[in-house]
Image 1 (cartoon, rainbow, N blue to C red):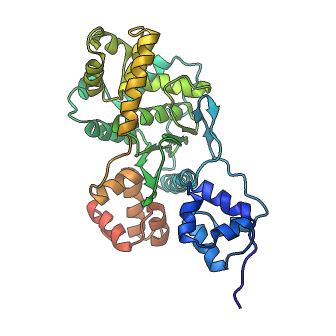
Image 2: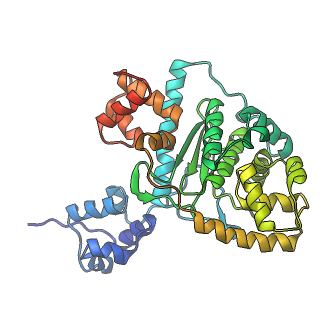
Image 3: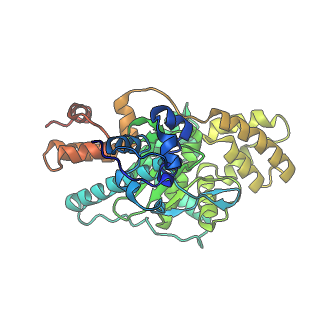
Amino acid sequence: MTVRVDIPPAMFEWAARRARRDLDGLADSFARLPEWLAGEAQPTLKQLEKFAKATHTPVGYFFLPEPPSEEVPIADLRTVADHSVARPSADLLDTIYLCERRQAWYREHLRYEDPQRTLNWVRSVTTADDPMTVAAGIRRALDFQMSERRSFRTWTEALRTLIERTEDLGVLVMINGVVGNNTHRALDVDEFRGFALADEVAPLVFVNGKDSKSAQMFTLVHEVAHLWLGSSALSDLPLTDSPHEVERWCNQVAAEVLVPGESLTAEAEIGGDLAGELARLARLYKVSTLVLLRRMHELGLLDADDFRAAYAREHAKVMALVGGGRGGNFYATQSMRTSPTFARALVASALQGDTLLRDAMQLLAISKVSTLQEMGNRYGLSA
């Protein structure tokens, strides 16, 4: 006799919304889903397990009397039209949870390797500090000066250098456009662009890799500003004024780090072909044209009407390009997704027998021991 489980219909709808899955699409794989939703039939345990896997939902949740209220575990500073964003997706939550586990592992690793380590710059300022002064200090700490950026041939080269300098400060930088290594679970830039997990031993920054390279640059520095404040936060980085004071402050800091006001005022040639000038400046500063427009308006180089018109045009162009890169070398991509510093430390620990292979593979989001061993080879490590 087949045993069926009594699941409230609302749980199926909740799980689908949480996974950003369309009910009609799910019905293609689960023929009796309409009956489950209507309360006319119940799934078998095996069917429920398959549905839970398809929607990335813990099976136990379905046995609750009503959908649980899931909150983002860090300060949620995202906004849409100046209103807070509700109901985080399973993809976002799973990404934050994975990064928190990685941070916890690395923190314990460092406490064993370097018990005295404390990053004094974390939590060294407040939003009462002048953003321009803080930006100058961050730019010096990163050693990411305009003189060097002029020599970068591509946004990828500039981003790679910025990541290296940020990791040199002691920050784990993870840039990924999917959940773990699951290419079927793409992250949505409309939901979030990045987050910071502040910690005086093992601070971490995550950047949504589905965004453009120039936008990733801004997100990375914005989240670094959060670390300077010592505040963990989830951001979507609207370039219009955020209702959150800390987001406005971090935007100001990031903009000044990447596009120093004194430099832009001297460099910009306004009055002719604005679109062409924006493209030139974007190549020079390695930021998006939206950031440049915002800076021009702040510095009085563009009036409100010209700013709004140009911003609308450039925003449409940028959104058409968003989607992230495709392909590439798996091991190079894996290093970027998990932080080169973190990945090397974890792989070394696993190969030395200090961390269980199972645990290391879960943290790296890989399924084969041979993949971990090859990562070790590429890092110059041996079992």
